[in-house]
Image (tube, rainbow, N blue to C red):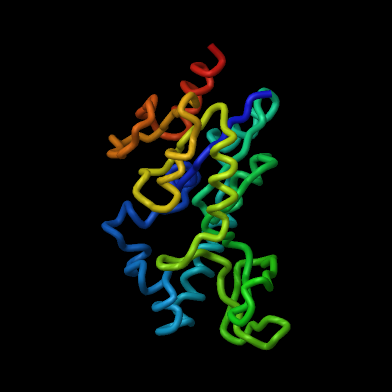
Length: 227
């Protein structure tokens, strides 16, 4: 069974109603991203950061997987599908995808500020000041913020190198290091890009572009790979 590796971004979740900060001139719900998604922002105002992610969880709990998520899950009957997502929501898993690697962390997890190996699932949407780990330190969202290392990157590179087909869906290829994954594909690996906007990318790979939203673009992608 051929290995299909998928790099997904905010565009695929946007069709489920989840907002992307890049659609608002870098502002995210009225905040500069450094206020709510960086170590500096956390140290300056942890209450603001916690509230911001509480609102994101509330929003995510209302969202449902869309047809693009569902079609990626369905492709597991034809391919060995591995999803590498920049998204922190769990819509891929809800749609039925078995193998999902979250590059930027998970919205419904918290982790210790003293020991980042201590990670806890969140059942609901709330994470507040005073919620602590077993060591007594404040819990923070288990999210990779701007300026932080991406621990899952090594695994993502390993998976990308194994791909027989590589699909990029819902990402502008502007966020690094994730955007650099294309360069780790085999020279013979076909690469497809689904995005409604014209994407400017620098790559020496031959990329087939499907200029559609995620849901409609998945139909064309599935037709191409099946033919």
